[in-house]
Length: 99
Image: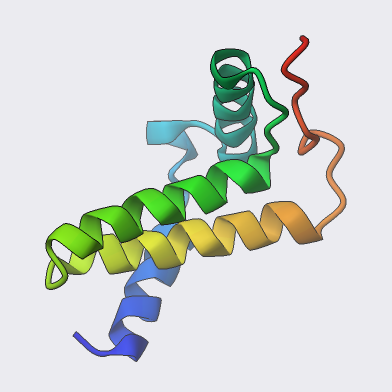
């Protein structure tokens, strides 16, 4: 699989409506951020969640470098994180560990 195929597949995954199966991306990332903030005792944002998911996929790729899914998912999480970090959306705020 070449880079264009990886990005094309990731694009397909992140641009189709997955809300029916997985819920809204922003809501999910905020929910995860809240849970991680409470568990870790540190502030976590939606874009932090995306970055950590990219790192999770890279850790998996380190173990099995030829598994395409890790590379596709990492690209998708990076795209979602970039969207969360660069657009104005009041729902995508850092969740305080104190809440």
